[in-house]
Length: 267
Ligand SMILES: CCCCC/C=C/C(=O)SCCNC(=O)CCNC(=O)[C@H](O)C(C)(C)COP(=O)(O)OP(=O)(O)OC[C@H]1O[C@@H](n2cnc3c(N)ncnc32)[C@H](O)[C@@H]1OP(=O)(O)O
Ligand SMILES: NC(=O)C1=CN([C@@H]2O[C@H](COP(=O)(O)OP(=O)(O)OC[C@H]3O[C@@H](n4cnc5c(N)ncnc54)[C@H](OP(=O)(O)O)[C@@H]3O)[C@@H](O)[C@H]2O)C=CC1
Image: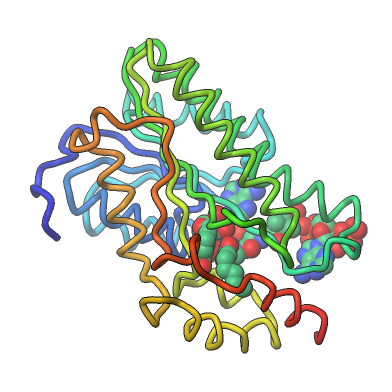
């Protein structure tokens, strides 16, 4: 860890989807640098277990919350207010999707992915801004999206949702600059994390081919995504807002995304 050990001392951060994978890694990194952290996700038991582990590093509270439900997000904001009294950083990490050809995505499947990745991100951002960032006249939002720079064949729903988040980021960054709130995205490529375990064969088998395609010859690590978040969350990036930082070993410039379509076709 090369950032100053007290970089986030006295800062409070909310990491959605913080019970697993990339979100857990981000929460861990923030705690190591002195932050107080809250994590949320839908499944209470693994969330409580994650919070117990993370609490060994520093204060970590949890609350079950489906980011698609504004009322649950409001209750989460109230809880953060009563536990910590303020919020300095929101990491919109919760998200996901399933591989499918576009023509096979049901209306319900489409809506589930849009609601999770786009609507959920908006609800949490607006509610945390109203409760904390705007009254405090300070705040920071980092949205975890995905590399979809050249579209996302095989996961068109999430490509559309994440493109929406990227554009939302540009809008909120401008509207909320006056309140001293910065908003940025981190766009991971393929990262070795619990998220990848959710995919069935033969999509899983594609991961090796995708690794071979990558110009750095490997997949990314959770810590590499967390480090990008730390930079955007910190004063080291104080003049940066409305941008996207790729953590993808160049996949946004060079990758064969159609591999996924071929994998889904043969499944
Ligand atoms: C291959 C390399 C890619 C690298 C880049 C990206 C990597 C990652 O993002 S890894 C992170 C992955 N983690 C996750 O995706 C976990 C979270 N995902 C989910 O929770 C679900 O996928 C969700 C987003 C769809 C939300 O789930 P939920 O609301 O609980 O959905 P339901 O089970 O109620 O289903 C709603 C609707 O969606 C259809 N559906 C769900 N899963 C699939 C599937 N695997 N295949 C096809 N359709 C699916 C489901 O059938 C429902 O539709 P209807 O049947 O029409 O009612
Ligand atoms: N791993 C990778 O290669 C990449 C991942 N990403 C993105 O990074 C983020 C984290 O991925 P990763 O850690 O790998 O995957 P995980 O599946 O481990 O993490 C997803 C997290 O989001 C939570 N979550 C999902 N839906 C909701 C919801 N509606 N409300 C609240 N929480 C929710 C899940 O918890 P619960 O089920 O309890 O709700 C889980 O903790 C995701 O947005 C993912 O799409 C982007 C690019 C690449």
